[in-house]
Structure formats: C-alpha cells, structure tokens
Amino acid sequence: MSAVFGLSLIGVFCLLGMALRRWVPFLRTNMVPAFVIAGFLGAIAMNVGLAGVIDGVDHTLFTTITSELFTLSFISIGLTPPPSTTSDDEGGMRRTLLRGAWAMGLTWSFVFVVQALIGVATVAVTGRFGGMDAVYGFMVPFAFAQGPGQAVTFAGIFEQQGWSNAVDVGLAFASAGFAVAFLVGVPLAKWGMTRGLATHSMGISASVAKGFFRHDEETESVGSETTFSGNIDTLSLHIALMGISYVLAHVLAWILGFIPGFIGDTMSGMMFMNGLLAAYAVRWILSRMGVTHLIDRQLQAKITGFATDYVVVASFMAVQAVVVVAWLVPILVTCVVATAVTVVLVFLLGQRYGSDHDFERTMGMFGTLTGTTPTGLALVRILDPRMRTTTMAEMGLMNLPEMLYIPAMLTISAAFAGSFGLPAALGIMAALTVAYFVIMLVTRSIGRRTWTLSGQVPDPDAAEPAARSVDPACPATPVHQHSEGPHS
Image (cartoon, rainbow, N blue to C red; front, side):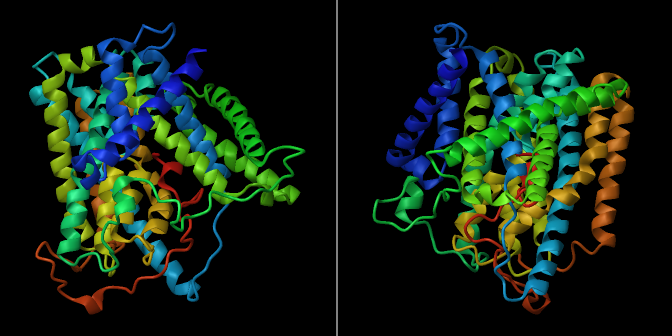
C-alpha cells in the first residue's frame, strides 16, 4: 500500500501546486511549474512530520519512487516512435538540425565537466563547515546537468561504495537546480524577449501563465486509439510494453554486473540506460513484426511527461533536511557558484552557434543544464511558442554528441570507487574540459557572435536560416529527447 499511497500524495501536492500557480502572482509571473511547487510542498511536509506518520511512507520510499519512475521515463522515451518530417526543404532542415544538435551536445558535455570541477573546488573550500568531503562536489553535474533521476541513480551506486548520504546530497543539488532553472531562466527569457533576441516570441498568454487552458481553447491531442477497447485498452497496451522493457532492463543489468570492477557496478546500476536499450530492442522487434503502428506517439509522450513530473516531486520529497542542514553552507555556496558559471558559459557559447535562433538555443541549454530536457523545452516554448525554429528538435538530437560525456562519468565513478585518487580524477576532468573545447573549435561549432547582451546582431547574414521543427506537435523523440541519453 505504501507505494500507491506515496504516488497518491504526489498527486495531492501536484493539485496544490496547480492552485498556487494560479493564484500566487510571483509563481505565475515566473512560470514556476506546478510539479516544482508540489516538490517544495512535499519536501516541507515530509520534513515536518509527515514521514513516519503513515506506515511505510518515508524518505526511502520516495527515493525508490524517484529511481523507478526515472527508469520508466527512459523506457517510455525508447518506445516512442520517431516523428515524420514535415519540412519542404528536408536537406536544409537536416543540416540545420545536425549542426545545432552537435554544437549544443558539445556544450552540454563541456559544461558538465566544468560543473564537476567547480563543485569539487567549491566544496573543498566550504566543506569544512560541516565536514563535507570535496568528492561530493562531483555530484553537482549529475544533479544540475542530468536531473534528479540520474542524481539518485549514481548516488545510490556511490552509497554502495561507502559514501554515506550521497543520495541526499544529490537530491539537494537537483532540487536547487530545478528552482534555478525557472527562477533564473524565466527572467532571462523575458529579458531576451524585451531585447528582441527571440524573433518568434508572442508574449505569455493568460492561460500559459496560469498553467491550464480554458475549455474553449484549441489544444493538442493527447493521442489516438490503436486497439479495440473491448479487447485491450490502448493505454493498457502501452503500459504492458513498458513492463516488458522493464523486465528486460533488469536482465541486461544482471549481465552487465559480471563486468569486473567499478565499471560493472556502474553499468549495472545505470537502470535508466538499461531501460532505454531494452525499449529500443522492444520497438525494433515490433517493427520487424510490422506492428509499430500500435504505439501512439502522442500518448507515449504523455506517459513520459507523467513520469518526469512525478520524478521531480518524488525527488524533492526524498530529501532529508537533517543531512542538508548539516552541510547547508557548502551545498548553498556550491549551487550559487555552479549557477553563475553555468549562466556565463551558456551565454558565451550560445552567442556563437551561428543561426538566427541562437538565443532560443541558449535558453534551452540553460534549462537543460540546471534541470532536465523538459525544463529546457519549457524555456524554449516561452520564446518560440509556435515552434517556428528547429530548437526543440535539436535539443533532442543533441543526445548523440552528449555521449562524449561517458569518459567524464566513468572518471567520477572511479573517484567514488577509490580506483582514482581525487587529484588524478581532477586532472583527467581538466584534460577533458580542454578536449571538449578543442573539439568545438576544430568542428567549428562556435564562431562569430549572432547576438549580444545589448540585443544587437553583429552580422545577421552570417547566421543560417531558421527551419521549422520536424514535429510541431511533439518535437522530442527516442533519439530526439535529451532524457534518452545522459539525462531526463
């Protein structure tokens, strides 16, 4: 009963979050999502007495819910069919997509490593206030650049290797990242609109600000039926396919567990990646059988959205204030420094991507590097509500170059496992920082500025033309959504 009760509590706090978003001007103006508000409410409730009042409902339960839903979200992403191309100029759109995705993916990998270095350095300086080891600073990129699901996944592995309270530290960083994504990201997006940097913005409608639509407004479909409900409901089929993928993910994790050393432990514990690979396998089998039409793209995307929203709330509710308070100074200072550095790097690089929608790309990167891909997409929607640019599709495709982060991830894992000392790990991370930047230069991923802080465009003729999104209804795909790769 406890798991169902935990999910029910998340739902209650989500409804409260919707009400507060509707009636509190500050939350409405800054477009703070209801699930983030719900997370804060849930965290407060759990730490002032709700935990333990109901048998089985405690911080451990919500840590488990976070981990499991995160795996299911990746499975849902892997099952989602790709979109059909709607552009008249497929070749030009493809080039725009690939160039933008490559540049943004490299940016993500570069900032991931920088966040790790900043985290360790800041915790090393401030960690004496509470006795926090500098190695915990390596949790920053997992939380900021990847989100609460991966923070819990990797922190759980690190706790098994002897680093107590790693989960709470990771969740604290992730919670702060989500708050930053909107409390800093929305004002930055609005600032760009006033400077004329977002050429396709329309302003924020009353419905968008409140967070829900009127009954007479035209909205997107949530999907179509693909099965006869008298046989099996369409939603039941989608959930069943996710269940098969979940079982296969555990089989894959068991096989990977035979790899010796920390690599086997890490790969086996990365259930989100195992789930994604299992889902790809299931979808491939369905394609060979000629029945992939039974998976409705819109419905599967909504299932992913549900899992993502609930993951965020559960991650907030899993945070134990006792641990966070003990290390409050290093955690807060690290979050502030990591946020400032992320803003600076994203803005410096985002000015030089070489398109006429670089500001949209910049804000998408900021949201992704402090929250998750849906967070970045939410900021882009403020600037490009009609999806006139390819930004959203690019943010999905950037999964592929983001996989360059794997050496950094393995280095951090080795540091927690004791295979590398902290100095050696920092040296490797510094070398990777240089390597990623050199790759950006060699591949000409960055060049002449296309916008400035004053709002001027130095050389508009140098910018490549915008292309329409490949799928206005739902641009993210199994290859296209960032959550499928390094984070959710």
